[in-house]
Image (cartoon, rainbow, N blue to C red; front, side, top):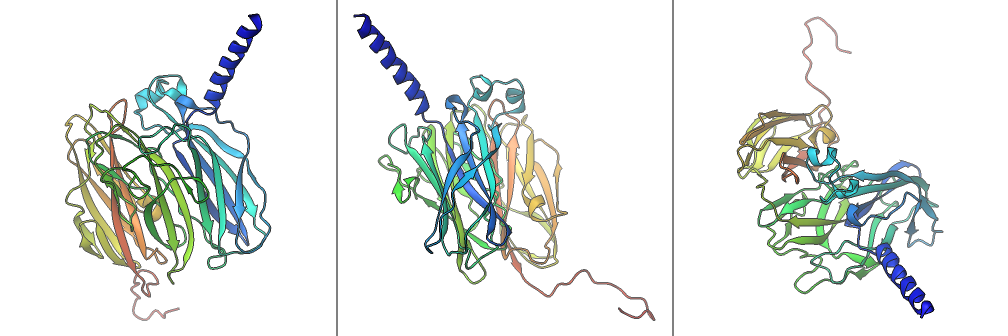
Length: 410
């Protein structure tokens, strides 16, 4: 009898212990790369973790690097450079008082972990694939099961683009959105090489080429009822009608000026749909207003310009809660050095002015992402807008200079 109870207690311990180890806890991640020298890249693995079920450590993580060119595949072990950085979409009061799950509180929280190292590949290949997989995804409405593996990969064509760097994503990584309120979400991508990007919704994966099991009515291209993605800007729109987590995977492909595919990344993440008393800010229905400077408007959210053009435009944002403060931010300051974002007031309606100079070498097509957050608590309300900038190359060599009469030109 004593042995029976000992075995029973030990079995219960194993159940709890192993259950915790295998608990769903990851809402997404990605792999990116930055070119730093011949056949050499800085490889970065980013994984997001639900603080309520967190157990990841800061030990090194292994990623695989395979190719189709018969080259030796290097063993890649990435050291951790960022551990348990909280990126929860919560108001400063909740975060500062340690009330999220990341600090032992009750409000939902998300950690970001980053592993990174400089890797020299044995040679160029048109399909280097960097991949990472592990267990387990956060439980979700649109996948079957509670302990699904996750797998994401990034592709580099180092024959066609020997100095290519992958796109950089700057937006809120795991967005919380309110049920029955329209969602506008943009990745805020920065593309460092002048390549054109194409965005598409694809299957979440458990292993290479093995799709995660989708629940009835959901697929990779349709992971949420009514979801749509702009293939040029990556802006995602939908109105959620079901509460819970939804796994979404976006394939971001890079094409050079000849139309060759030079790389791709998978952005694997979740929309967390929650019940809210707050009404979040609304995107600008009318698009750009008060456009001035050079260039022309070709649509409500589309600008065409030439190298060297100076452009300014305004956008207006509203919020149904008149006491909410609104805060506008944009990736325009990262895309165009010296650009500015000036916000006029903080209560609805809020107007923000954006000014920039289109420098020579700017990508033929660039997405300017604008994000607006309110000051709701505990969960900050947010929306975004994507402005597409098409640039026509020219012989621009700098601003005109007036020479004084009699002074020779150099």
